[in-house]
Structure formats: structure tokens, C-alpha cells
Length: 592
Ligand SMILES: Cc1cc2nc3c(=O)[nH]c(=O)nc-3n(C[C@H](O)[C@H](O)[C@H](O)COP(=O)(O)OP(=O)(O)OC[C@H]3O[C@@H](n4cnc5c(N)ncnc54)[C@H](O)[C@@H]3O)c2cc1C
Image 1 (cartoon, rainbow, N blue to C red):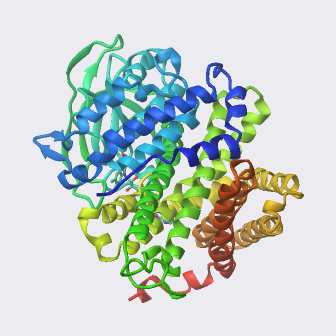
Image 2 (image 1 turned 30 degrees about the vertical axis):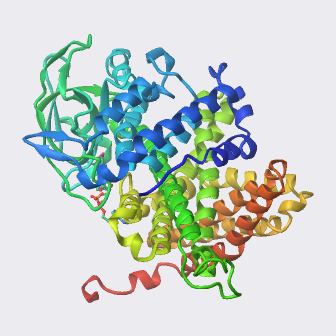
């Protein structure tokens, strides 16, 4: 019952009109053939595939879930066939390097397609998501033969990838990991240990699965400085690509979960499995970070995709369902009652979703453009700036969009009333699926520490300064634009406050190291709400050429955001300023 139509107009508006997509394509190294016509054709095809193939499998996949039997995992009916269509359509290599069989389209194109997949079928989307992360790690850190053998196979969709970090006692703190890697005589390694919660660790899409596993060499120093990364294929694979026997690894079980039930979450046992070192010994975390950064943006897109689908359904229902009369008199006197959409509280929930989806899309796409600029730009200084800004925006995209996805799917359920709680309508599935997105790939708390600690205080605010410069440039460029005049002073003031708030935490943290942890999540939300205010204004600033109705639509949305959502930023700033004292005053034993 849950519907999905790819929001192509909004996607194109953000890409081309707000963020200058065509100039972006022209600026990228090796993207000569990429132009609007080509990208539009790709997006049209992607919309068809997602609406017609993946979206109809979302609810049935959720109901059926994955099944484990003696180490084999069966995905829900239709999933394997959809993967075949995905591969046959060339989607698995959309943004991958041409040298290894990919189409090398800009990452932004892949991200827009991915947003559609996340709306259509989040569980299914997790299988290619992990392959994309593995592609990035192999691309940047693999040896040539590893790329020839493993990268090519993943790009062609013949094999898929995984990311094996988590162990039973080791989650956020990877320094604790114990999985061992013993060097063997033939330059391979024997990997032994148990990994848990491994997405797509086992499935029936492909014969071989390329596990990227973090493990410790015998002489490795303790903590994160002693972690190395290994390629451990399910089927033993020689350096010339010849397949051998089954490797000594197995899927011990799959987890029974609250949501994304059709995404296999596996316990993986490695019992002396044959693997190859990727990148340098003891520098595995560096290689893994390449995967993790890609995956963090990818999970942020999951938040966006879920918000979009929740909003589309909530809007349809609010227009269709008749309950009570409008407070200001009947709006549909021909009917026994007015549609839900006339009620202010329903409009509050709809507009909250609309504002978050639209500004969130602009934020996410802006971040992904930076990936392209960093990877395929030609100017060294511009690449460095893109990297700094991307590093700063990544935890915001990941944590804020996923937290807001939880809020938006909650609103969608609420708009459906009791029907939102009933499985048939699909809204409760969206809420259940959204819940994991604030947890995996680094929880919101961990993203917040990354944003405030590593990406801001430790780097002297390099990313923040770049972002605030961008905001200031926008304000200056639009000083004479009557359409956004009301937002400019607010943005200017917020930019100033953001700097002051950062300096305040930095100072407080010098005196007491608990201040960083105490401020982090509120600082993250503050940053998110201000960033979304900036993107809301940008959505208005570019709207006029689209016609009066479109401009009014964006203006109404931004006014709602600035007056009814943005005040949340002030309460987060107040919480930051309240400091660590009240959090740390109570003794551990006194809780209860
Ligand atoms: C469905 C699913 C799929 C997954 N897929 C994968 C996968 O493919 N590969 C993989 O390797 N892992 C995967 N994971 C694991 C996931 O990334 C971890 O669950 C996550 O990183 C959190 O680790 P944890 O569960 O051990 O929680 P913990 O690290 O124990 O954290 C518990 C709580 O403490 C907080 N916390 C921890 N440290 C700090 C700190 N220093 N300061 C403040 N708060 C802190 C956390 O924010 C969290 O709220 C998956 C998990 C699930 C549930």
C-alpha cells in the first residue's frame, strides 16, 4: 500500500538550478561525456527501475525477511532477480572507474540514484551499498592485481563486498578488536575471529563475496595503530582470479531485527580463512576510513530516502482521508467531512517533513559534489578545500538526516493515525527501518564527537570556516534579491553565533575535557538546523525562473522552517552553553 514516485523535478532542481550541476560536470577531470542530457536519461531510467522493480518488493521483503539454513542465507522472493536486473542495467558500475569496467559517472549521479533506491527499498539497497564501500577501499588502497581481480568483479556485479569491523566486545571502539591475521608462507594471511552484525555477509545474489576484514598481525601494537585490513573472499581466489575451494569462513547466524528485515545482518566466523593484506600493515584504519566515509554519506542518503517516501505517503493520505471540519468552516461542503490536510496540526507535520526533505536533499547533494571535486578536480588548493569541507559536512549529513528521518517517519505514522500503526499501510515499516540509520556506521553520538572534536576543534575550525564563508558569500550575492531578503539577516546572525559557540566550547574544553563530550550532540543538532536554514534559503533564491507557483512553494516552506523549526537551534545552543557540570555532577552509583 505504500507508494513511491521518484521526485525527479525536485532532484533536478537541486542538482542543476540550486547547485549548478552542469558547471560541476564540466569542471571534473575525465567527465567529458557527462552532460545534462545523459544524466537526465540515467535518472529517468533509474526512476523506472526503482518505482517498478524495487519499490513493489519493499513490503513483501519486510514481511518475509531473510532466512538462514546451515550457513546459507536466502533473501526474500524477488530480491535476487531484482539484483540481476540491477546488474544487467549497468547500475553496479555507475560511478566506478572506467579502467575496471565502470561508467565513471560523477558520484552525484550515483547519489541521486541511491536516494531513489533508499526510498524504494532500503533493505535491498544495503547489498549494493556495501559493494560501493568496498569499491572505494580497493580503488584507493588496493594493489593493481587486487583491483583487476576483486574490484572488477564487484563493479561488474558478479561479486559483492562487505565491511567487517564489529566484534562482540568491540563496536564504536575499534581499538578493542581481536580478530587475528597470521602471515602464511605464500604471502597470504590466515584470518581467525568472529565478526558480528555484518551486512550482506552472506546472501544468494552472487556466488562469491569479498569480505574486507579488520584484523591484527601478531606483532601489531595495541589499539587502533595495530589494525590492518584484509581481503577475505568467500571462495578462495588466486592472484590471477582463478577460483578455488570454499574459504574457511561461514555465516553462523543472522540477526532478528526491528527493521530492515530483508537486509541480512550476519555473524561471520573466520577460522583461519585465507586473505590478502590491502594497503599497509597496521594502517588498516586509514583504508577502512575510506570505506566508512563513503558509507556515512550513504547512510545519510538513507535518511533522506526514507523521509521522501514517508512524506509522499503522508501527503497522499492527508489529502484523501476525511475527518472533522476545518476550524474556520467547511472546506469541502460536498463531502461528509474535510480532508486531514485542512487541520493546522496535520499541516505542521507535513511541512516539517517537506522542509526537512527539501533542505536535507540540498545539503546531501552539496556534500556529494565535494566528493567529486576532491576526487576529480584539477586544482590542488580547491581539492584540499573540498576535502576539509566534506570532512566537516559528513557527520552532519549522516547524523542529522538520519535523526530527522526518525522524526519524519514518526510524523508520517501519526498522520495516518491508527492506520499508521498497522503493517498493511507501510508507515510503521518506514519508522522501523529508519531506526537503525542513527546507529550503524557510527552512532549519532560518535558522529557528534567526530564533528566537534576531530573536524572542528582539532583542525582549528577549517571546515567550519569554509562553510561559513560559503554562507557569507551567499548572503552577499543575494543582498539585492527581494525573494530571500527576510532570511539574510537571520543567516548572517546565525553564522556569527555558530563561530562564537564553537569558540566557547573550545575554551571550555581546554579547562575540562568532559566539555567536548557534553556539548557534542547539541552542537551537532545546532549545526544541522543552521545548515538546513542556509539550504532552505538557497532553495528560494534559485526558484524564480521556475515560475510563481514554484517560488511561492519554496518561500512558504522556508518561512515555515525559519519561524517554526529554526528556533530549535537556540535551545541546542543553550544546552551547549550549559556545559558538562549538570551531566557529571551525579556519582555513577547514585543513578537509580
Ligand atoms: C543492522 C546492523 C547492521 C550493521 N552492519 C555492520 C556492518 O556491515 N559491518 C560492521 O562492521 N558493523 C555493522 N554494524 C555494527 C554497527 O556499526 C555498530 O552496532 C555501531 O557502530 C555501534 O557499536 P555497538 O553496537 O557496539 O555499540 P557501542 O559501541 O557499545 O555503543 C553503545 C552506546 O554508547 C555510545 N558510545 C560509545 N562510545 C562512546 C563514547 N566514546 N562517547 C560517547 N558515547 C559513546 C554509543 O553512541 C551508543 O549509544 C551493524 C549493526 C546493525 C545493528
